[in-house]
Image (cartoon, rainbow, N blue to C red; front, side, top):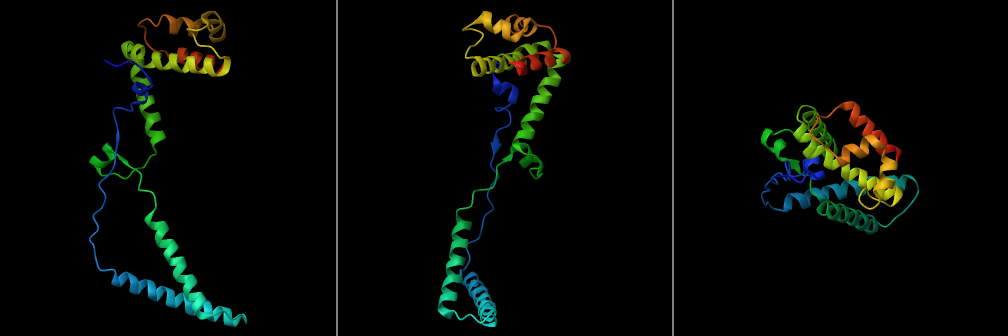
Amino acid sequence: MSDGGLDDLFGAAREPAVEAPAPVEKPGSPIPRLVGEGVLIALTTVVLVAGLRAGGVRVPLLLIIAALIGLRVVIYAAAQVAPPPAPRLRSQIKTGTAPATDALRATVRRWERNLDRAHSDPELYARNVLPVLAELTDERLRLRHGITRASDPRRARELLGEELWSELANPGRRGLRTRDIETFVNALERL
């Protein structure tokens, strides 16, 4: 049985992020990589020296080589501490699809599905949507006015309006109507 909190609406427990298995790299000889780095540094040195001499500037060859080696070491070190790739959702791993949406978009889609189902299922509305609406209302009252519905019911009732107050105080088992939700959201935005 669920307590009807934010996690129920957001569906955090239903689709946990699971990291995709990391690709296995075969340990190879570092010699080809070092030769490639040496060739890159040699070509860059030739281009830099030619460009500097064409401009009439003389810089010691060892200084240029040392600077280029230092730059490659910094680039290599930065690549080693790069953040890991973002985790993929379990459904994306099963289907093999690439992550096409971000986590916020996926969460909003879950909210939309929960609200759509709440239209036809009054029990779902009372169990999932109303507790979240109550939490949001209390948080908004606390942030804007320093009260909650429990701490100062009279003032909260004045601020919320009779419709939202009665819905949160006596949720009943009636179905969700879009017009009512719009009224509730507008009341929350007015706070």
